[in-house]
Length: 323
Image (cartoon, rainbow, N blue to C red; front, side, top):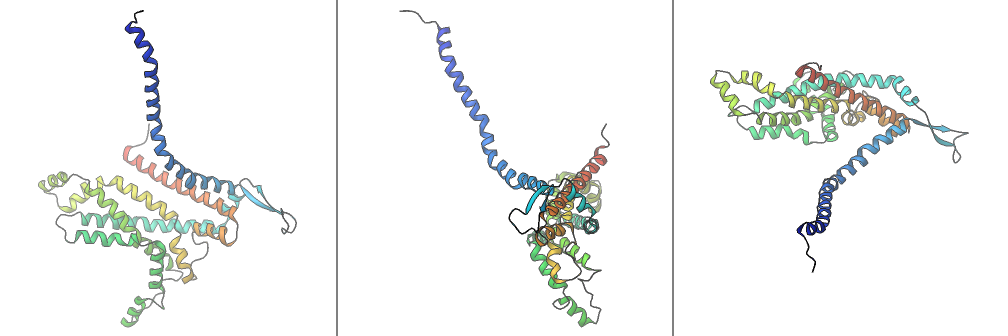
């Protein structure tokens, strides 16, 4: 019998062992990708593909040959940047964009200011009805924007508004809240009523994450509740305030539901009152989906630029200019 050395035995059994280890390592490496596949698939189908299709439409137009009645008389051709030039030259888009900027300049500071005030008040020690107050302030956010707009719309209408009945009983003037000069503030009020609660919850949650030892130390040093809020709570809330500001800015630039719902109730809101309303009109009323796609891309880029610019500004103020 020939003797088998331990070295030869290890050499014969080492290859299958290495192969088994390599196979297990390959399976472990593939596991994260298996779990990520549903999320990546949804991201591609619901985000990337619609964006790519919108960009594709924005670069094309319909060319009509003859009377446009026969088969093949309407063909899609490449238009380059013609749709973008037409959208930027449209005065209704500029007017709507300026209106939305004014809308945001009024809504964003007032909404975040009220949310911060409510969060600070609810975070005070020994405050009564704290849980009920949180739910009451947050509850309007749970109402869909269309439903909220309908509710406020009937409160604004002179024929159905109990406010006008009360003013009439008191002998006071009865303003037209859906008139040309006031409908802007009526839309702002609806968004304010629905958005304060969400931002308040975000800021209140951030306040709860602050160590209470900081407050105790400040009270021992003789600080009042107002000084604690101004010198400790608000500075530590800066990341949450930045996040809520960015979210509110994005929602403001995409305002659509409130004015679109109020439009049948008043003549003061046109079909191009905001850029998104103009996109809706072009896509579904005038059947010009190519112009609507170009305007959509412009609005998306403007939202990206403003949001990124705000974040860069905050970063520069917090950390100084990059070297």
